[in-house]
Structures are given as C-alpha cells and as structure tokens.
Image (cartoon, rainbow, N blue to C red):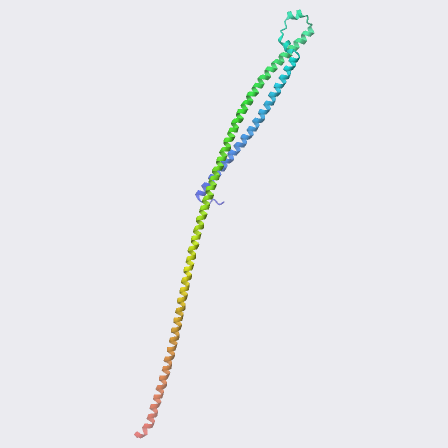
Amino acid sequence: MDLVGSSPRLLLLLIGDRDENEKVLGLQACIAERDNEICRLKELLESEKRRADSKRKRVAETWKFMLDSKLVLIFKTPVSPTSFAASGTSFPNMLTRTSVLGESQLLEQEKSKGAQIAKIKVEKAEGYRVQIGQLEKQEIEKHKAIEKVKLEEQKELAEDNWNKVVEEKCRDDQMSQQLEEDKRTTEDLKRKMLKLSSLRNQTEMAIDISAKTQSTQCSNVKHLKNNLNVEKLQTKHTKLKYKKYTRPNNG
C-alpha cells in the first residue's frame, strides 16, 4: 500500500490497527508463556505428589514391617544393665537387640522425617495449586482482553465497511445523477442541432431561390438589352434607308 498519498485519517487508522495487532500479539505471547508456566508447574506438582506418595508408601511399609516384627515393642522397652543382668540375656543376643533398637530408632526418625518432608511437599504443592489458580485466572483475564480487542476490531471493521458502503452508494448516486444530466444535455444538443440543420436547409433553399431569381432577372435584363440593341439597330437602319431615299428629291 502506498502510504505517501494516503490521507492522514487513513494513516491514523493504519497506525491504530498496527498498535492493536501488536497489543494482541503481546497478549497472545504472554498467554503462551503463562500456559507453558502452568504446564511446568502442573508437571512439578504431579512429580512432587508422586515423590510424596512414594515416600509415604515406604514409611508405611517400614512401619508395617516393624509392627509385624514386634520391633516397636522392643523399641519401646528400655534396656538397663540391671534388666540385662536379671534377664540372663547373652551378650550376642544383647548386641542383636541393641542393633534392632538402633534400626528401629532410625526407622522412627525416618518416619518422622518423611512425614515432615511430605508435609512440606504438600504445602509446596498447595502453593503451586494456588499459583496455578492465579495463572489460570490471569489467563482467563488475558483471553477476555483478547476477545475484547477482537470485538473492538470487528466493530471498527464493520464501521469501516459500512462507511465504505455508504460512500459507494453516494458515489453511485452521484454518477447516476451525472449520467442523467449528461443524457439531458445530449438530448438538448441533438434538438439544437436538428433546429440548426433545419434553419440551414431553409437558408440554403432561400439562397438557391434568390440565386435562381437573380439569374432569371439577369437573363431577362440581358434579353431586354439585346432587344433594345436590335431595336436601335433597326431604327438606325431605317433612318439611314430613309435618308438615302429622301436625298435626291431634295436636290
């Protein structure tokens, strides 16, 4: 499109459309970025859920094993030197029991640690869920903004099309009116030409009649002159003849 010869209003409209398009593209890019972020957070949330579930499952299985093996009772039973001596437990058995107690303590610590980690993961997942909700809300708002921009563009386009239709109709009406005026002018010129042609024919006929009349008159004058000359010659001849016959008698 040649923008050099365009009107200022058209240039403003084109600049406005370009700004709106850039705004829409910016919003779409932002929404795409938010969508990617939402997908990443959802995947991270699912991963954290799987890790927390796996951790809880391992802790539950360990705790079940301890219950089935009665290690919890051993863990809860304090061992003192007196009870050790009174029980008559052998040293190897005591070492084994001590080892079991250490393992049970480690399992209990692992259970507590796993519960804390699971709690942290749940809290983190909840934070992700809240963040995802906010991002989804922002995405909805962005979509609404894009739809609003599209509606405005469609409205402006409809107005422009309507204005073009009105302008075309006005132009067609003007052309029709001009054609009617040209038609009337042509008919008027034809009538004038016919009138002039009729007058010219009448003038030519009058000139022809006048010329014929003048020619006839000239012929008549010429004929009269000839007759007059003949008469003059006849008169002269008569006079000469008379003189010829009358001269001897006078002598």
